Image 1 (cartoon, rainbow, N blue to C red):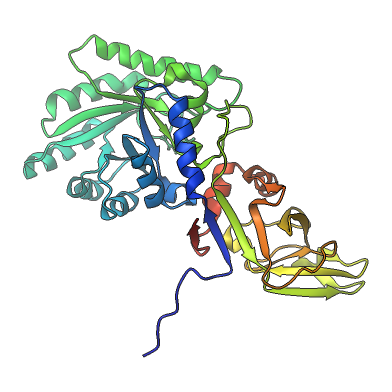
Image 2 (image 1 turned 90 degrees about the horizontal axis):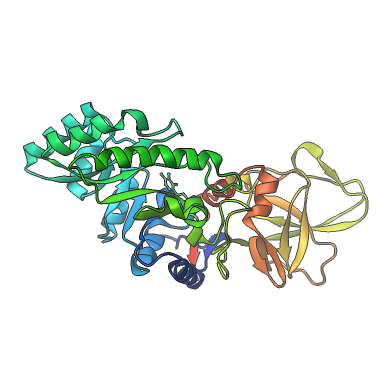
Amino acid sequence: MIDKPMSGIRSAWVEIDHQQLLTNFELINQDSPAHLKKLCVVKDQAYGHGGVVIAKAARDAGYDYLAVETIDEAIELRDAQIELPILIFGEVSDAEFAACLAYRITCCVNDIDKARRFNALCLAQGINHTVHIEIDSGMSRWGVRWSDAIPVIEYIARECDGLVLEGMMSHFAMSDEADKTYANLQHSRFVEVIEALEQTDITIPLIHMSNTGGLLDLPHAHFNMIRSGILHLGVYPSLVCKRIEGLKPIMSVKAQIPALRQLQVGDCVGYGMHFTASTPMQIAILPIGYGDGYPRVRNEGYVLIHGQQCPVVGGNAMDAMMVDVSHLDNVSIGDEVVLMGGQGDEWIDPRDLVKWKKTVCYEILTGWRARLPRRYV
Ligand SMILES: *Cc1c(COP(=O)(O)O)cnc(C)c1O
């Protein structure tokens, strides 16, 4: 019988700095009001960092709640023996609701029809199940429109003995920019619902609206719980939101050089003939490409080798890219390459990749594909 080869030994990988993760959680805790409850958003494998690892660290840092986007993500956390309450954002189907009951996963119920069906399922099983309601305060995404919310809340609270309305949430379309006009309009719509509820006998224990942008910049929108996903990863949602001293990105992307090549004048590099050598030069071939989540660039961007910037030459491929190492002494096969993160005195920030990929830092973090093994150091 042939032994199965070890997985995760590929010479390109994502590295997560676990110590810095713990530091980031500590700094955020010190910076946040003591009685504020905190929900840690670990959707999409905690933006590519590993959902279970980040969820366990959040639990150990005293976070009160976890949130994911899909039922499979929630079940993965339960299967890893994580017992914190878990909220699923968005809408769940009837089939997913049955799984929510089995795994004790909180979900959102945002309309009367669904509340009626989910309540019937709970009563049939003799279960009381915790739910939240999402108020759409101006994103036109999930939830019930703020102006239509009260009847739905009253229905769930008064008519659904099988449902426990534990939370009410809303979500900002723009909380991290300097201009808070729209965020404040959304806030005031959400507060309208809260004030209308105060005229009734209904109380909802958890009220939450703020993502990282709100946590940092909108203290009046903290209510009694915040939901942050990107901050503890050491990355800020924008260039202008408040900073927490000492917070640093925990994700790096690294590789080892598998091949070097000498170019002669006139040699072309890569698909599409985007680069032609005008002098003799040495390039390194790297075992990573846009199929791993690196931006699809053309003579743009750089990596770090021996602590120095090495520009990308030509167009990168799905699985490979070429960088100019002519200015380095003694570069060898096996040398470490940093595609995101630090080496020596140099640092490639997720924001540098944001420029090269013309996107936002959320997509840079989540964009590193699963075929890059995750190494925790
Ligand atoms: C993703 C998400 C968050 C977390 O946003 P960050 O900017 O990463 O803190 C919070 N709430 C909802 C509803 C989300 O979908």
